[in-house]
Length: 346
Ligand code: NAD
Ligand code: ZN
Image (cartoon, rainbow, N blue to C red):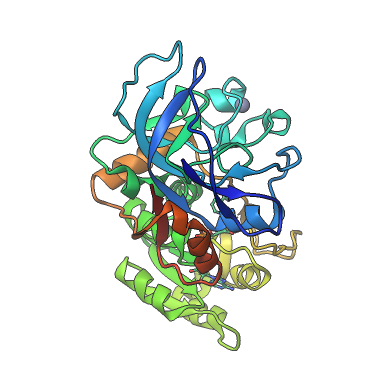
């Protein structure tokens, strides 16, 4: 089968021929219906994966959904053709966090060979994905796998982040989403579905701001250089400022903006891996502001996200491409040309 492969840090991805895996005891082979293309794939291409051994080549793709194709010895409860989403952060499965379905916070993560498919193990940008345990499969019900693939990360990550802040997100509060790309366009919808807070969207691209307005943002602010985005947002929020800021970029300018617009007794959540830094001290942030750097979401939350999509309350703006187009799509994502989420379909 053809697969989009990471070779080594700094090298562009390549399309290569690899063997279809055969599931061993306890494993499941999934026929890929769609593999989402995430900005994190670009971080992998640039820097490799921390902890993934010597970062030998592997197939990219950590946002996967498809159908059960074959099960290894001892796997029960699943049959060929079952539509599934693949939970992407592969923990040890038995530590305290994993037992609570929080494999994203697996306590043994540092001693595992890698954090999952597309992050050191072979991922889903191919015809088939080998999943190490049926524990990592979530039933898709009536959702089409290619539409559902981005739910496993682009929706699950902001869902997890928003859920942690829900008690602050009252109808008289303001939530700000910075970066309205793959994660951000889901974050705007998730906020609308989960709480009554007013939603403000920030980006440097007018098309994405228009997209955010269509998805329910009350205010959409362009924060490109030379604009006083903080003043515009503060004029909207008043002295309370934002109860919740979700930075889906995490670069220095966006973190600097976040600090200027967040209120007292608030949450500033950074999911973007843009390399920026927040100075944390008693006097550097508004009093009572908690800073949070969540990773992905839990298995249980993936079920909740799928339920939201199934009921039509959130929808991925997906754009479909073939597997062999993967390297070009990744380059277009880097150049900011992909709206919503690109999904590779074998
Ligand atoms: P994307 O490329 O689809 O979207 C990024 C968006 O940010 C675009 O709309 C872009 O115009 C906007 N943007 C870029 N620079 C900006 C700036 N200076 N100010 C305002 N907006 C700006 O990316 P994505 O797939 O949504 O991923 C976003 C980030 O989240 C990446 O860093 C990715 O690695 C990270 N991520 C983290 C987790 C986690 O668990 N913490 C999970 C998935 C992705
Ligand atoms: Zn664990």
